[in-house]
Amino acid sequence: MTVRVGAKGQIVIPKPMRDQLGLHPGDEVDFELRGDQIVVRASRHPRSLGGRFAKSGMAGRLLDDRKREPR
Image 1 (cartoon, rainbow, N blue to C red):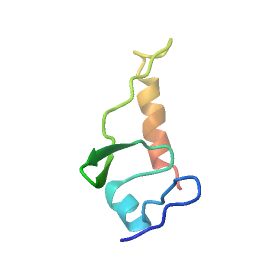
Image 2 (image 1 turned 135 degrees about the vertical axis):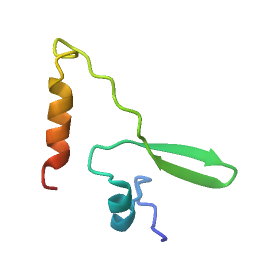
Image 3 (image 1 turned 90 degrees about the vertical axis):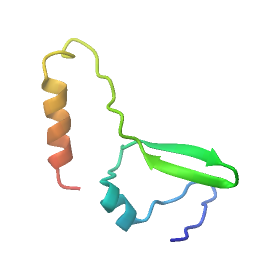
Image 4 (image 1 turned 60 degrees about the horizontal axis):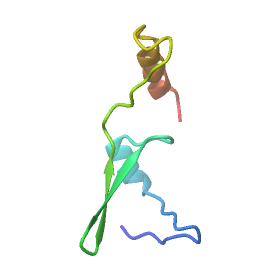
């Protein structure tokens, strides 16, 4: 698939690819330069959460709930 780079340097990842990878608004992607190619990879490392509820499990439950919300 070919997409155009917008005026601000932005690109849109085609919906079929986002669906296949399970990418949603707010998810992170990694960019890598390989010669003359740009490789975009879904970032799968979990974000570390801190604060007073870090060990309560609440953050994990909230993130799971968020994933189940309709988009």
